[in-house]
View 1 (cartoon, rainbow, N blue to C red):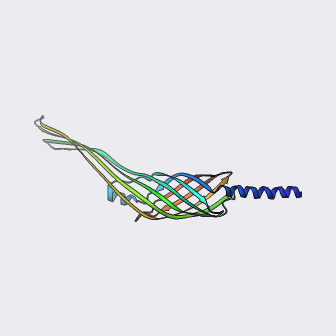
View 2 (view 1 turned 90 degrees about the vertical axis):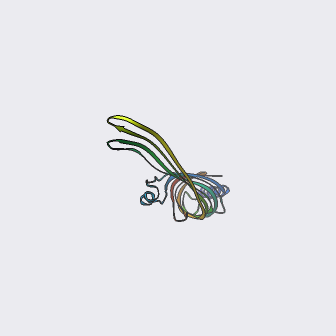
Length: 220
């Protein structure tokens, strides 16, 4: 019995020691983004509703101890898109105008992050923690509109004149800044791997995009 107890103590000590030898970790995550742009705001600014995109993250971290890590990473918050296309005609006794339009808007957002991750004992099977830090973010707006039209003049059933044409409009704008980010995480350890659920909020001026994700971490 004494030998069994001693072996258990040694095994526990060894597993804790091995866990702390894996000071570095590499994490990747994938999930859904809430852009914090309401339908009303999108319609007022762009005339279309915008989608909530998918996002992904890569983070490299270093564990200072069982409870505190420093980490830096890159998060791509995806492309939020909106589109409106269709056609219409205007007809009178002498004239006919037919046109087709295609309008598209994209907002691409990215963030480069540096911060800390404060947790319960990270060597345990289950853990939870909070992360907070500072980020440099960049948002790019793209708008494209294509218009094709055909105009005819008809008198007594005969076409007198006809003209066709097209026009294209495009716009690109950038916005960037440096603001805090913060979030929560809960995970499960298995050997050198960890699986976790995470939710991160990014301060970006008047917006606060949210990133809810499933993350896989390798400890080495």
